[in-house]
Image (cartoon, rainbow, N blue to C red):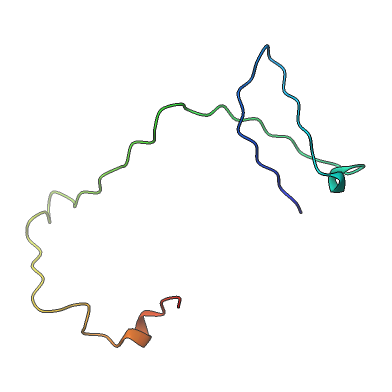
Length: 74
């Protein structure tokens, strides 16, 4: 399956797309979504009030496990 994504502004309720030749004679699904022009507001995560301020980290939690165990991409 191929996908083409376009972000454009609609003028006079018309939309025209130029698609690659590989789409010719194929069934396609067209989905039009209205985008919010505002910048996304980053959400700040906060702990549950019952545990906020009660957790203490004692020691080095990063170095306590060998680097190979983290399964990080190289």
